[in-house]
Length: 287
Image (spheres, rainbow, N blue to C red):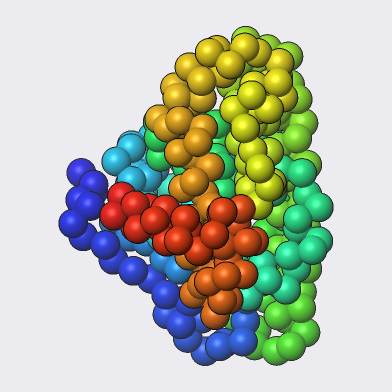
């Protein structure tokens, strides 16, 4: 119903924080959520609190229920359609300045990149690894949401500090929940998927270093041929192509921040500038 990749409605940081230009986070709830396809230049955590509906991401359509949790990264086309009259969705918005400020802290969270980079990409590629939060956990989370609701319209340094602290608490809690969730799945019939998730996490954490298919297959404790088959099934890509695309994405981000081409190539694991330029050109054409 809402899927139209020719329509890319962009919501910007300036639009979402019109009266708080220095703010880094924002939280709000919507009880009758029917949102057409759009994208934005900030991160957004969505948690279904009540009712059911459909979540659209790129070309996918997923039915969602209370407890379903999604991270929407910048530049990802998505939307919602309610089924029930009350479709309560919690939104926690954080712009890039928030992640820059707390990068050292967040990088120590083992499942952070899985939630904020890997899972959204797999979801768009028709792999379902998004979390459904248990009822008891959802109740505890609602206490934090209530605190954020209380200060939603306050404009002060103190309120911004509380918003940042609560955002860190929620992200940390979700990462810990993901660790437990994945540990349970790794012991179940989803173990094969868990192996590839480990490989993806390794790539995202070590993209500046030399990474080989042999090393990744050893990490997953499977043969090279088995690893290649599983990786292709989950990501719709080869390991080498995935690594190059991720390096290109990181290099493009560094270049947009004013980092020199020489330094960007080195930081992202390319042989040299010309190698980076060739990979970037292919990545941009594909994107």
